[in-house]
Length: 111
Image (cartoon, rainbow, N blue to C red):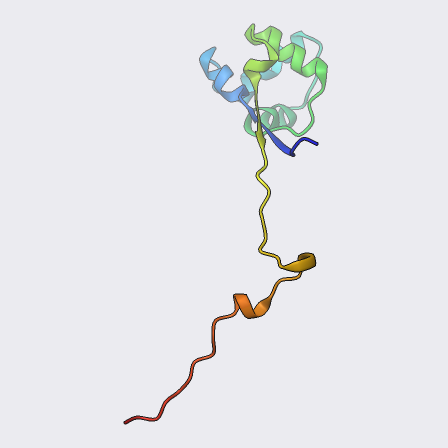
């Protein structure tokens, strides 16, 4: 059985836009419209400034066409193995509290 993996991604649209001399979300709206993608100015602003959790393929294809890039240049992905956290356990998964707890302090009278 294989270990678990954690996947993550980084949305790089803003970097790609800057490399092509576009610095405002409003500059992207007419370029999308030319390719049949009609989004409101708020939707385009969110697309540029936030990392989308869902993205339609027509929008992705239009962005790739606008900037002449492939999807991997817009979305940087990463996958890492998750190292399981091991817990101290005794027999049958029960922790022996006497082994974990510190000894009780003994108070002695002053000499």
